[in-house]
Length: 52
Ligand code: SF4
Image (cartoon, rainbow, N blue to C red):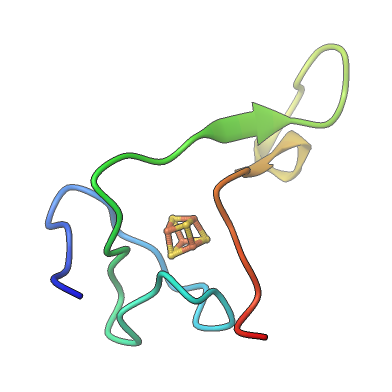
């Protein structure tokens, strides 16, 4: 899979990560897990999939 130069990501546990600081998807979805996001911890990548 080719890296997407527009999506930096260091989540190496994700099957879409190129293990060199980039995501390989064309597009990702970011979500929040609180009604009102207050800080970076309130947000996450909803496109994540585990390696298994
Ligand atoms: S899908 Fe999300 S978590 Fe996975 S490599 Fe891409 S940006 Fe990172």
